[in-house]
Length: 76
Image (cartoon, rainbow, N blue to C red; front, side):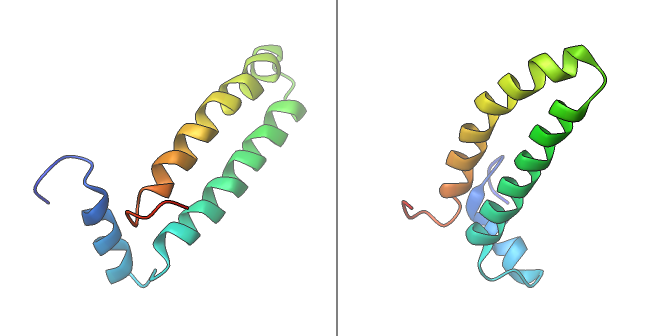
C-alpha cells in the first residue's frame, strides 16, 4: 500500500480474499448494519442512545455509502 486509506488497495485485498464484487458486497453489508443499528437505537432502554443514535446514523450512513461508492472508481 502506497498511501493511507487507498481504496484500490482495499479492493485488491478483498478480491484476493474471495470477494470479487467488493462494492456491491460492501453496500449490502453497510445497508444491513445501519438498519440493525437504527433498530437497536429505537429498541434501546438508554434514552441518550434512543434520541441521538438515529440522528447520528442519518449523518453517518450517507457518508459511508458515498465512500463505498468510490471503491471501484465508477459512479453508481
